[in-house]
Image 1 (cartoon, helix red, strand yellow):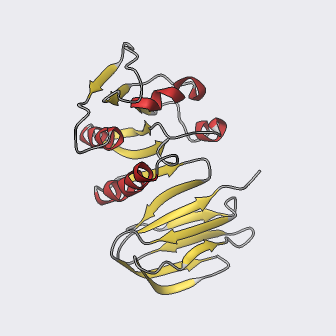
Image 2 (cartoon, rainbow, N blue to C red):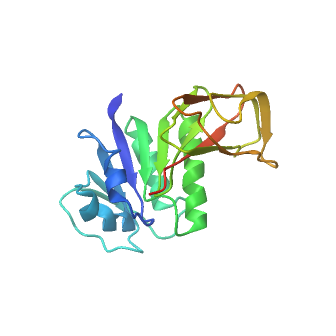
Length: 211
């Protein structure tokens, strides 16, 4: 079982590189996806693996493992990279450069969190505004560093939802995909909010403080 974090870098815009670097560790494994290579210099990273069809970025020909994909395919470069990393035994994932710019790619990458959760993996997606993760089998904790958090149901119906230590607590709640009402909650000052769900999946979006 691989113990290091697998970091998958896509081509969406990144403005706060310092924040992204704060999530990286010395033993991380870095997969750059096609135009995600534009972030290499600002992130101060060397790829361990490059994946892409190179329709939006030229293959740099670096002396690292590179998987060249056909341009006509079912999976995006990022989804292929995720599947490749699962096959290589990674248990923890961080997706960056994966949200923003194009809504279609953003949604595909958000739903990749559901794919990873269903595979029993731990995963987070970080953009310039928030940290996202799936809540299903295990409780999720939100420190009061995050001024706001939201819970969105992205699959079927989520049942038995409990929210503690928040401005708007909830006990044994239910959220359907058709009606989302758990938006812009707040952690009580000095507390850590805790979210649990007995059935289904919830997308937890923790909003970063504004500067």
